[in-house]
Image 1 (tube, helix red, strand yellow):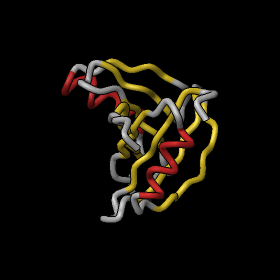
Image 2 (cartoon, rainbow, N blue to C red):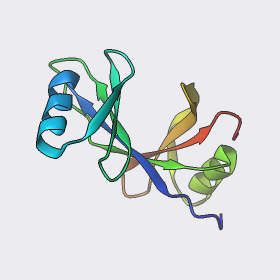
Image 3 (cartoon, helix red, strand yellow):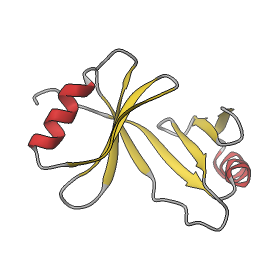
Image 4 (spheres, rainbow, N blue to C red):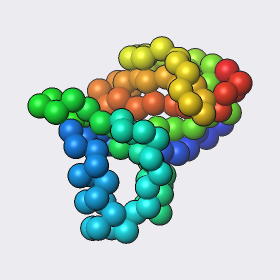
Length: 118
């Protein structure tokens, strides 16, 4: 694939999303948009991202780097052709569609596209 696919978003997870939000607001001045009790987006952080609530008592996942592509199918083909392994098939979410994969060294990432970029 000759098209550059940039880093577009970073997702964090938290066992206490509200406490994490308060921390990042106070420590770094980030602004937040609530999408309900399970998810909030952050802005003014150098790159947009979000914080997902995970079950208390579980371990928060490492940050998830999310790339953006105008052609999600072509991006998935490129990932697979380069040796990546799909860990979550394409799925819809509010605002678009995405899939997750692991690169050969084991890091999980995601690629998203706007609805209809298939």
